[in-house]
Length: 402
Ligand SMILES: [Zn+2]
Image (cartoon, rainbow, N blue to C red; front, side, top):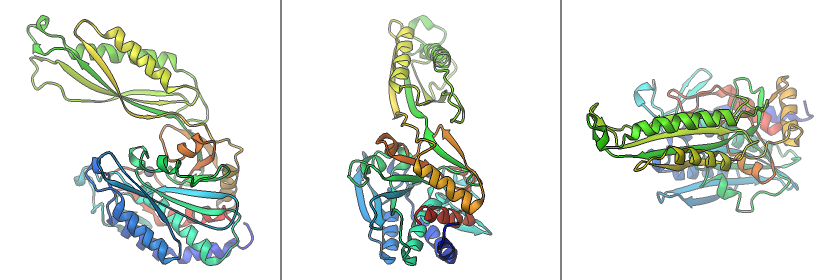
């Protein structure tokens, strides 16, 4: 262990009750987007800003109006007078509670049971918000000389792609070329994996327009369902036969293309549907360009289109793959070193199909490692965080700076 760290470790342990209180208060202040029936992060950001202020840490709020007119504030704070900064990026928005009948307790009231705190946003990403804040506080209070500035980003709008969060912050001149990022927003149960790469993501909405008719007289209409089935079958075959490269960093090692949601069409069995809407979720290895996938999907659509049948392809969500952070990158080595020193584990480096805030600095050529300790309970009913993980992760984060 690095010299003098025991003092900081002890300081973090002694903040335990405070950390639980702040997480509990934070999750009682909803931060769900307007699109999901909420009012955004404003109240929660205001609360967290006041907590930081109480510790003598001045956070700056960067707020942008989203397409519903809702303010989406992110908080940015830093301490230290070094050349380079390591930014800890956690997000403060959450998804909605989902089916409330599946929850055993009120999702917006912290329920503590032994080492567990239950509530929406405890794991995703409240635990990381608290670890990031209290590691900063412990370092500040201890007066330790920092090796890097401690930067904290409490980001908005992550759950819907960060267009009004991290993507905007990248344009504000906050981050410098040599800065590094840790994004605690993807976890393994013992913290033994560091995520260094993410696949590209492409969500497509497919709309087939034909002509509705009575099912007994199909010649009077154009059955949109039939053309949707043809399209999906062809596109599924093409994508799976063409995009076959494997990259052993990733889980799974190949690109994935899945038809997922399908909108309700007609109410009766004897109606020939005139319109069909379905969706495809693609996760594409960085070896490929999403433009190429798009071109293929469009070409299949035009091959299936027939007389009065039109197929429209709309992009619902697109995140082009960011370059993978090298396994030799400083931040990866430092994080791996911290895990070895503090937990005696040699972490595995992985790539995933999901997307986190790490993609944006990676696109700007900056190093980013995604890491956290916890169970995979994000977006589920009865979501929880373990208090011990929150405390021990704060120690790992603080360790990077001494
Ligand atoms: Zn998250």
